[in-house]
Length: 402
Image (cartoon, rainbow, N blue to C red; front, side, top):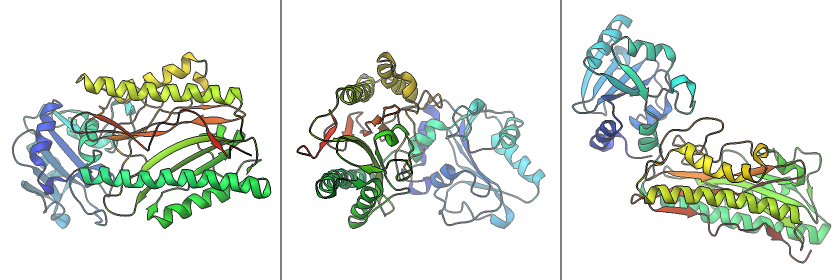
């Protein structure tokens, strides 16, 4: 997300390497196996490579490139010294030369496979690097900082996308209410299509259609709209809408929000109570982030997940919260930065200034599911901004006079 080294960010990268306690960062790719490394190195996404290359960024000093003879220009846009190999023996010799005297280097590696979102380097290559006398640590925090933090322009693009996703919610609620008034109901797929039309009219794209789920269908966190046994939204139904989109340009950044509502004038007590628990868990996550960053503390993704999950567990619904609390958000819906997770992975990467992520606790029951998803951005001064308008404090009353 930040400018690549070709854009003059080398000093900042080397400072971060030192801050995180490494002697250098060894970026490796084979046939597009390491997308974060390619983005950070500024390699055009359309460029096809078929040979291994390494780029070593030392904690200080010039970059060191290791490239194959027939693809020797793959890193020509970068500064530094170039080592060209042809045979595998020459590759290994170049690697030993570049890593000589280095104690610990960062790579896209996760010890024990604990965090697959970081793991882009195969075990054999890690073994090869270790044979050069180095220990290998995870570059997870470096990836989070240089591949997943936003520029001011990108954050503005996120806010622009958020305006449209918020408007799409309001339009969808009106469509549901009108459909119930006119003909007694509306299909989930019709609401989904309406949201997609709203996106298209305002220049938003998405990698997958939104989720529109009625009643028991919303009890499946990854429900495919229209696939349930009962898909018609009528009076006195619960409705969950989860939608995500970004503008179709180079700096387009996703907005990803989930809201829940009830079609009718009176919200059932159990539905309202479960919603309050979910909202309280969401708010505990926000408070955790704000408190830690205001105090200048190091905050890791797992800690926010624990703060959120503990609220739901104390309310007796721990088993019904069956996914991580949140994910990194960027040009991809699930970005390469720090996730909010201590369930599916033990996310030890840090919440860094410039990062954008979701907080989205949910409780999924046989009769309905409730999720409240918001987006959180950390400014350079560590101030925390929740985007997407006012927090949803109660279920939307869809058509109050139905």
